[in-house]
Length: 125
Image 1: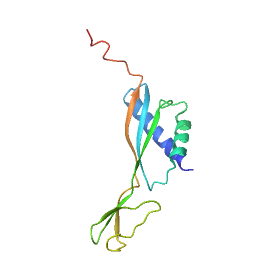
Image 2: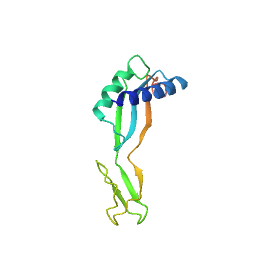
Image 3: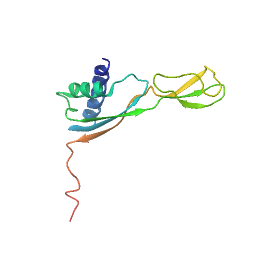
Image 4: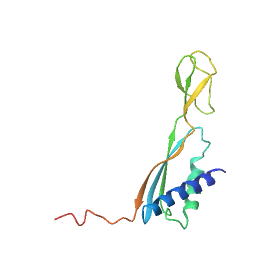
């Protein structure tokens, strides 16, 4: 289950960023997870919750957005969704020299901090 190592790495990076910027907590973490990354979303959710325990990230919501795997044929430049399991033969010319354009991502997109004072309260009136 490599989801635990992924969850721990995400929590460590987000917690380091929170400490670096003096943030008291994290409300939400959004990830891009490629179709070919081999990540089971339910396992990642479970592991993320465990990895967050006792950190500044504890209680944060994990939003993992799937990224479809796409490829381009080097011979004829046709692009297609490779699917799962991946089909890396060009659907147009049958060529096997392809470039994988997306689908292997595992990237933190953004983080929403928690516990910040509401600055709007002092601006009204």
